[in-house]
Image 1 (tube, rainbow, N blue to C red):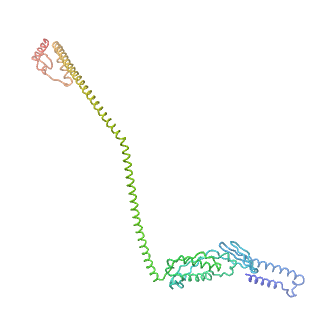
Image 2 (image 1 turned 90 degrees about the vertical axis):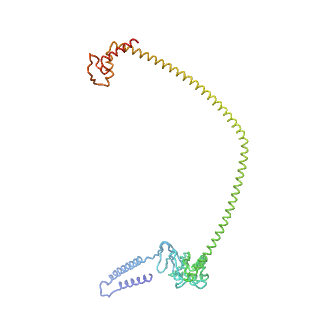
Image 3 (image 1 turned 30 degrees about the horizontal axis):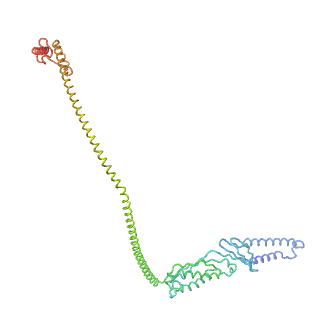
Amino acid sequence: MLARLKSIARAARIAVARAIRRPGGTDPLFADGAFDGVLRARRALAGAAIAGVAGWVLWAHPPLETAGPGELGVRTNQLTGDTVQWRDGSILVLPGLHHAEVYALRDRSYRPQQMASAAGPAPVQSVEGLSVGIDLAVRYALDPAKLARRGGELPANLEADVVEPAVQGIVYKVFARYTVREIFSTKRFEIQQTLEADLGSRLAADGLLLRSVQVGKVDLPADYKRGMEGLLAEELETQKMRYTLELKDKRVKETELEANAEKVRREVRAEAAAREQVIAARAQEEAMKHVLPFKERQIQQRRLEAEAEKESRMKLAEGSAQARRIEASGEADARRKLAEAEAFRMEKVGQANADQMAREGSLISRHPLLIQKTLADKLSDKVQVIIAPPGSGGGFLAANLLGGGAPGRAEAQHATAKAEEE
């Protein structure tokens, strides 16, 4: 940018010089004092042009450098060699005086693809000389404390120029110390710790911070992988058998302990039951001392209650018999009285009937038509119409129904006379 500014300033100076060059003396415009006014105007125009060009250059290329979030800027004074760091903002950078660089401080990741497969271009070698693929992930970042000192020395491509050579120089050397089996199963954590220690110190010398090293999938050769899988399967089966035997042994011990515990529990329960029986027997013996007199008193009380019940029942039986005798005597007297009253009633009824018949007989003898009236009263509610031949001699209308005329009257008179005699 400084060379461009210099070329622009040189072109402006040439244009101004050409503009103010004195022409020939034939033109009256440049004669005497007129030439001075034209010269001043052309100088003012040239100054304005230079100011406009300089303003455009400052507007198009401002002398500022900006560092955003997660970035660190380093400004170096090319005259004194002093450095200044800044973050999250802008700083003045004068062309020709200052040199500024902005670095990203965010973590970066590097995954070497050439060593990820056992059949790849550059796999790692084990101590047996077998090719092994390693899925490796290296996370790193720039060290802010060393950027001011080494900022100008860092290459543009950190991954290709710094990280990749360091990883290759450390990884191949570390994995060459272990066997394939150790890499695959038993020493993976130890290998990862060794890589972090060695690679961290190597990258720190180049102004980088190592965040972590992750050892992922291990890719074995096909033949070795099949043999390793079979061997691991046998080892797992052996471990499983060992664990099974240990488990059965523990179960036997557990069963034995449980049996001993059950035996002890039974003995304790038996002793407790025996003690309970002894205590219960003693308590029963003590209780019988008080129970037996109580039982004797109960028996005596029940005997007395039975005798009292017997006397009570005898008294009740005697009272019941006496009451029955009294009731029978009263009932006999009542029946006798009733019989006497019935006989007296019958006698009185007979006398009353006889007297009534005598009165009726005398009444009929005096008034014979009462028979017809009585007969009509008796039949009036049962017979509505009676058709009978008239009686001979002007007698009773129903004389024929009663047995005839004259013979019936004779018998009636005879009965009436007999009743009067009596």
